Image (cartoon, rainbow, N blue to C red; front, side, top):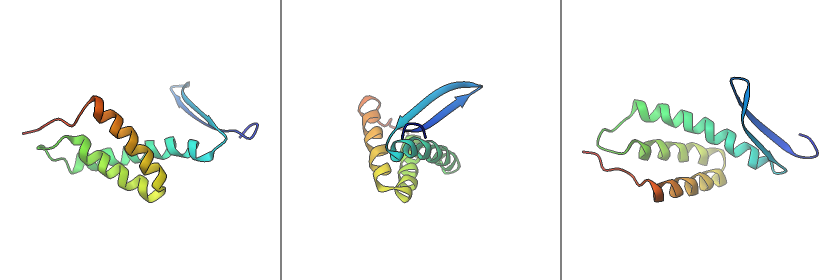
Length: 95
C-alpha cells in the first residue's frame, strides 16, 4: 500500500503483465479471486465436461458459484462481465 493506495501486480517472466491500483481493497481482491476461481472452474469443467454443451456454461456457472461464496458483489461483477462476453460471442450450440 502506498499513498493509501493498494496495488496488485501480475508478473510474467519478469515483466509486469497487469497492475491494478485502487483505494478500495475490493478493486484489488476482485481480480485476484476472479483469476483463482477461473482456474478452479476450468479444472472442474475439464473433469465434468459435457460434449453436448458449450464448455463456458459449466465453467462460468462454477466460477460464479465460487465467487458467490467469497463475496456476492464479486459474483455480480463477474456475471456482468460474462453477459458482456455473451453479447459478442453467444453460447455455441453443440450436438
